[in-house]
Image (cartoon, rainbow, N blue to C red; front, side, top):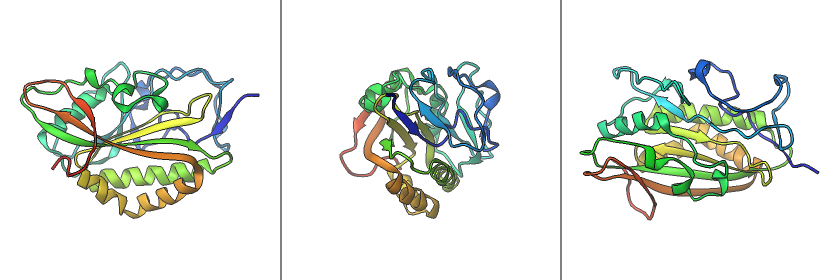
Length: 243
């Protein structure tokens, strides 16, 4: 007997004008064209493993020039723009164009080992901390994927518009356990706290409480020190992060 998990459409599978550039997306997944009237279903026997799932990067403010999109494994970019961004976060934003998971077992892997942090390169002179939130989850059987997806999309657009959200990434449920992982990278902890009180975020959290069997939150610090071009991941232990 195979496990089957219903879930909202992944951003790499959902054609919408809110994201770009869909034209150059690289996905490895053998599946028929879905019926747009049906909620997508994840079936371990029918889907091949997805080798690359793109990050969703927040679009830069109007006054900033666009960043060239990599032709191999391109990210998706929101149409909603950030109101502002500091110089070090702009460098991180550029580096995050190459963000990707290291393993398909990301939902069960420690955060610092699940993604290619060691491949992100920033200017040596910069020093900055950023706030990362991680969601490890498992959906309840029969939960409403469409309403949860719409609420999540609105909450994401709200967060970008209000400022601070650099990246949002989420995977596809594990074929055997149903566990999944999503993560946000914020310019500061204060930005993340402010987003929690916004109406679309509150609605998304209410739906999440009804829709998930498991919903565990982790908090980490993404750290860049002067004298190095690399970043590190450390557990969040308290205090302010970022601005």
